[in-house]
Length: 333
Image (cartoon, rainbow, N blue to C red; front, top):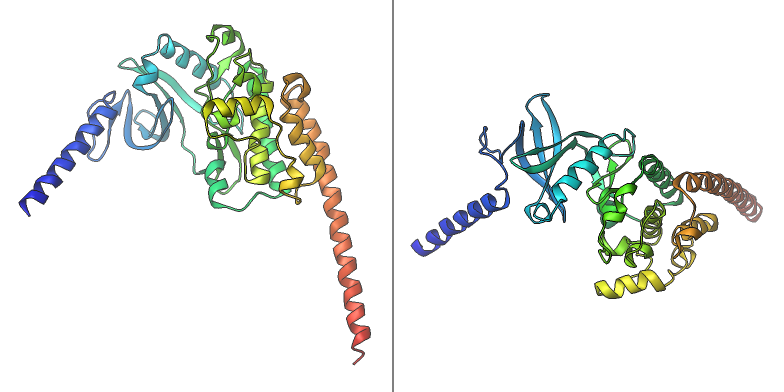
């Protein structure tokens, strides 16, 4: 019994040590139950983490509002010039005010730790939605695609490429079904692209564009390819191309053609399938020239899909009417 009690104490001690090691960039908490403080923010709990850093629920003690506080992790922060780049590009993103891009309240540093304070959102990511719900229907896919393209168009107008569009970086707001693009931690202003070392592949392998896989210079159309991969997955439940290894995945992205959406899901209208496949072209010049051009084509596809739905509805009503008449004739009484 005493041995079990000692183990329990040791386990608690290890948890404390891990917490201190993980969040050593935080100052001591000012309120019981908090994780600590960073600048003028009370850090209440961790709500997520990724390759770039940690995301916390925090309270802005100056403006008395809840925020999502993203803090660069120590591994990334140790890379030369990473702090400067993080802050500079986050400030560029903070200039984007759009309904489909997460709002950034503040970008700063505390104890040499860069952070971003963003709006606190309620809902779930598209990745969570894909895991727990049925496949999206045609209308939902068009609705989400339009919002994503609108958000990307505004960022691209300011010369900013996201470079990591994926379901985990797409937020669906609770109640409104509004899309918010998250995590511009990998975003780079176009003028900074020449500073990327050649051979650096940055982003999530499953959604990388072929030019990212080839470590080539990037433009807006790299985000359009990733958008195509996201929409393809929403239509079919699977990625356009897959491979077990990182090197194999990169080769597949460069060389392998995705299976036609219609063969995986016949519920998706052909015009929408064709538009999504146009985003997945291997060469950027073969894709839509911009997010704005994609939006124009999407509007045309939406009209086509609506017309098809109306015709299908009319045919179903007619078939039902004929069936009712046939039943009445067979049963005169």
